[in-house]
Length: 177
Image (tube, rainbow, N blue to C red):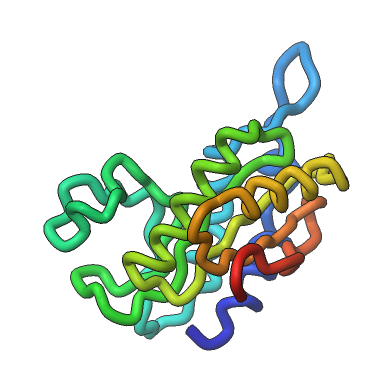
């Protein structure tokens, strides 16, 4: 999809601080993945080309999909799909989002999902988008270590969104890419 990187960068830059870190009464603001994702979806839709060969959808449950049964996708709900609903060919991107304060188990689950959809389902791109103002070398090292330990890892793009008001940027390629 031509121009997708620019759309993703502009949409992430447009996510306001209160969606980046949710204000909490009586406490410090916190990261909430769903809040960030819903706002990112909104910002992406505002920028989505019309017409487009691809649709943007969020959290599509692939359980019991007639073509995907047996591929191990049951129970997986990618945060975003850029695809052609009703068709299996030429689907563009699967995106998983994680806040910077994320467990290793959640990183591993998302990397496995991204790799599975890239390899077995045929998506052209798989993106792990990490957001938060506490992205540091320890987190990046953990992501790389988990990726290296993932058997049969298909190429996964690592994008970082470290600050509200700034665009996410492609950081690295995990796996064979």
